[in-house]
Image 1 (cartoon, helix red, strand yellow):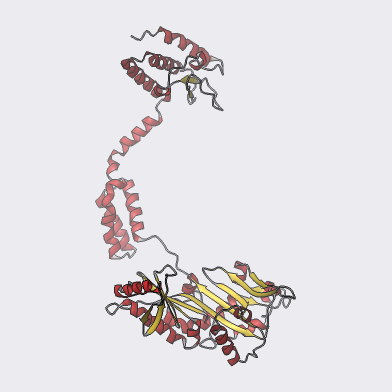
Image 2: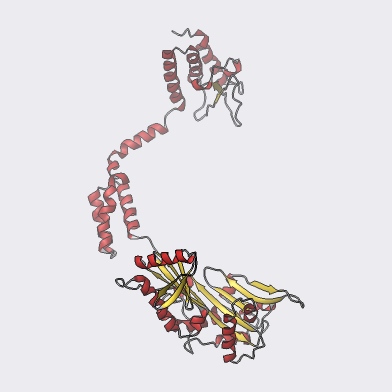
Length: 479
């Protein structure tokens, strides 16, 4: 096992947080340590992984925040003792942060790396095309190369994404050469030699890194059940998720024989031999919550005009019929408290609202505009603005005189600014009227600004000329 991180969601003891805060201040000027579960941890100057505090010891790192802790066990610690003992040590650390009065919560595995080392063989770039399986179909390989005198050589193959399952096949002997800490290469080489390594050949590591939903679907979230799940998960990965085959041994690539190097990996054992491939547990599809269901039913029944009492009775009967909890049934009254807001109280005036909508829909736009012009003309006359009265009077004449225009014709009104008439908009098909608002400056003195453009002739134009003669603004004397 190359990595194991366990998260403990809980409320951390305030006294322990204060102790870590003091140690963090001391760490800025020098070394500061705290004792956790009988082990000394060095407190770092800054937190990591979204936690305020970080403490390091030979057994691993501990990331501490107010809402919980993460225990990241070190690889040498995992390699030197049974997995169950390492998991118990992490639980003891979590119990220290929970305090004496609180119960230690159950931990959840957050990161897990399983690896098997293979000596006496090597892999090349050509092996990329020899992989088959579900993981190979979903992702593409990324190759790591190293330049040498004899040309570039492959040092690793990686596939997957960082959030879920990642497969890594890389030259571990080459990787250890770049380590600054000599203790890690010494430990790895001692383990290899204990299992028959000659100390000269290459050692390639096959590693699967499990994160996120993969841990849940493979039953790896509980730390106490890890020993009995490691071998089934490894068998599933090497036999179903990904395989290295010998191309050309069958008509289809998926039916080709397994590569002898991969067959050795399939025989690896962590805690128990003869394990069958793990069965992936698919997540249950989530549905609407009871508050959402009740809210939708209340909205629907209120829109139909049902009274609050009648609707609540129907909803309660439905919830009892489908076996909803008592809490969901009691929630009905609270959700329906806003009945008037949802439309139940407004149902009595629904006919009146419909009538108002129909009157608005069938209103004549020209008559509405004429009413606004009349109101504006009256206000301008009271204010003594004779020029504005003439403009409104002229516009009113054109609107009232356009009875010959067919229904549905849009009459466009342009606005002149500083004596310059507004340019015609594209697509205008009728005579446009240039008018002027009171807040946009003096009236336009240009004859073309107060006269409709002669875009079209015919009956509409003759009617407009007749209306202009009847509503001649020069005949208005301001009385």
